[in-house]
Image (cartoon, rainbow, N blue to C red; front, top):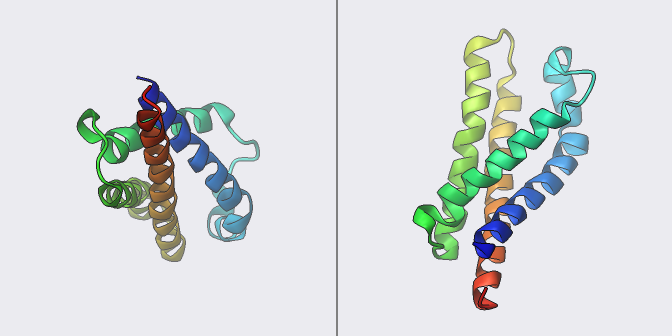
Length: 137
């Protein structure tokens, strides 16, 4: 159980750190230009916490330890990247389908980011999982 908890926490920490840099700085001007009129004045910490807690579980289930067992690095990284692409595409493509003037370039950038960030978070989870296993816990 310790290995799953460690991996889940690692997935969350990696996503949080990367997203803080991405949303808080790198992509902020693009989001502001493309959907600034939709952005909230106040950050919703409860919604963000729910997302990161659930996304960490999803990365565990679909990328780090599918079926309850860890797999080779290559598989973990591929599944992490694909999961991120599909998850972020769900959001972006749904918005493109239902909202007026949703920017295609922003969606492509966001889906690419989702794939990269999820690959990195899955890598962090796999590293933590394997480390706990090697330690015999």
